[in-house]
Length: 83
Image (cartoon, rainbow, N blue to C red; front, top):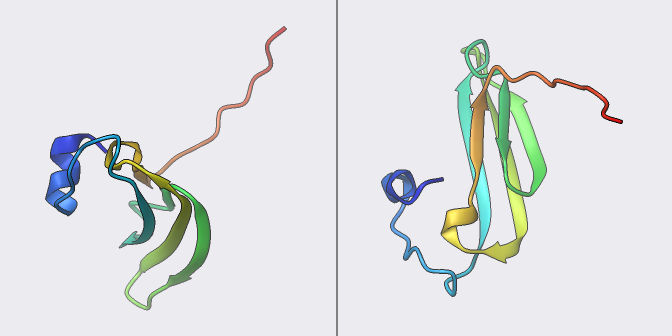
């Protein structure tokens, strides 16, 4: 996240010597946001009766706030080979 956007989520000093471990729970409309991603390892996920779904991620490696990442959307993989 950019510093300005991350400050909307939580207060955090944006310095490289301030490190944290992150646990994230994301939720969203499954039709609009079929893919929910964040740093680290997926630890749980599920669907709700109202058409939303959720995912939890845990990143065990301490990192500064400017390396935090969170993505939700209709993502696709593009594969190619290079020689």
